Image (cartoon, rainbow, N blue to C red; front, side, top):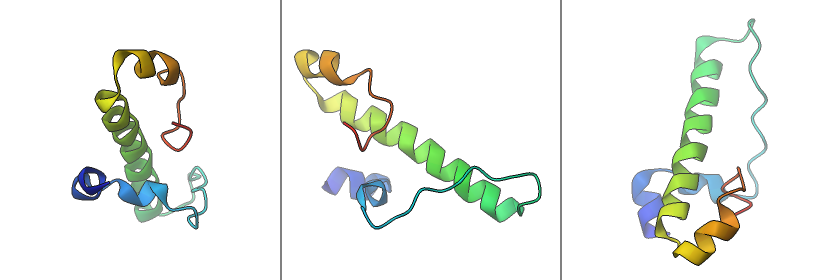
Length: 70
């Protein structure tokens, strides 16, 4: 958990956060940037988790796309 906090992706574990809807063309650049950062953090977070798993666990969890599912 400490590593995830240091990497700035621990907020993705929070259950109280709602899903961020995909921005439309009418949304501001700030909303689009927040959405893109959230999506990038999810990819990094998934990679960080998979990186520390043993080979046997990696084989079980690599097909899951969401870090919350892992």
